[in-house]
Image 1 (cartoon, rainbow over the protein chains, first blue to last red):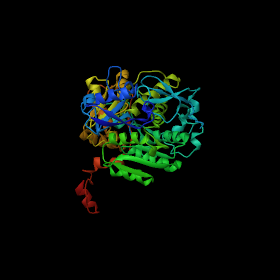
Image 2 (tube, chains in turn orange, brown; image 1 turned 45 degrees about the vertical axis):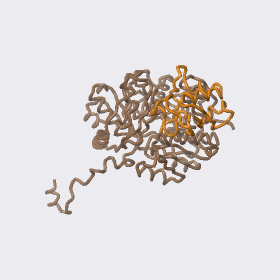
Image 3 (cartoon, each protein chain N blue to C red; image 1 turned 90 degrees about the horizontal axis):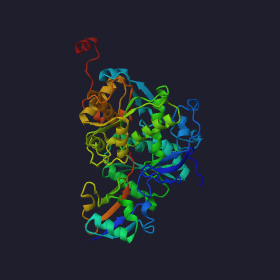
Image 4 (tube, rainbow over the protein chains, first blue to last red; image 1 turned 135 degrees about the horizontal axis):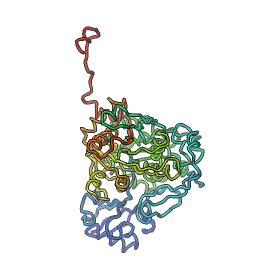
Length: 91
Length: 410
């Protein structure tokens, strides 16, 4: 499955400055694994030592926060946009 | 560009401690943890503070602002009333109770405090537009502060906010963009805008200016301590939206102790949420240290943040100090607004109703000590959330203008 991944400013050093890159995988977990093989080191910025999404990172598959879906097992349908966003404060 | 943030010397990651140069950045490159201002304080004395202006700039030597901050156009918020709430205390059975009433700020909410600091940061970084994602109060604070500071404003809100908050955000000028979605979705949008050339030179007060902006909440801690006669309260009840205000009040108390401005004594911090958006309260009760996001459904829209960024820190502070996090229903919020108004003459917005409602629940359940000195926060003005109480508001009687008619009615 081909998807697009939006990269936050602080991780663009890994993607050569690109704000959006293409990815592949049936689930979010697969997409992040492929992302890390394409851009070595980026995976460890998004996932902690135990392989979970870091607690101050929000990941969206399409419009949905994956914490409301199946976390890393959330399916990544063809053409979907995945966004990685640092937690932000309140208003 | 030469930056002047006064005593603030760096940004530091709250998770892993990595330090960064001062800049418009808000998340750690290593772990995504939130960055916050780190300081090198000089000698700060009570006398120096007391000789300062009757606004937050009396604490400028504890904030990330230049020494001449008070000479530039700003809203100059703060030094709001600490109301001795004897009547409310009596009604709830609390011996010594105070309401810190931040509805007295220029745009009638505590957000003027945080935005005032963000305006200075925007100036420092040469931004031309002041922006935010907002549940309403912040939108008004930003458009007003931008107007006075001579900056452009563009603020983003969920489209279904209270009309009074929309009117207030509009009247000061600038652009107000309603987003079809929840606050969390507005926040997400703003985060993406920052990474886009469209948002270049924009200071989002609660996103890329967050490390500076958030420090404004410390002034609540300083004022409460100074207004109590340079003493920390034994207990404090604080509303939770993102949780940032609560964590910064705790930071402010700790700084006062470290600087020797108050005596070191234990204090308990209690957090308050609306049941329709209570992810931090749920995590506290379940004993978790992570906060599972929720989709909000409550009349307390200013607290309707389903994914609170500082939630984990709120849990840490409530547990460390021996406090708690509790929530109340919409009906309890309305009852608490009326109780505070009818006992103290303070008309709170729904967030204030949440806080007083939780105070009541905590004392009734024995978790809050009725003998200990207690402060409860009202963060905004009831006129902004009039719908919450206006449904059954009507004259107590309608009569002809005659004494006989009045006698008959009473």
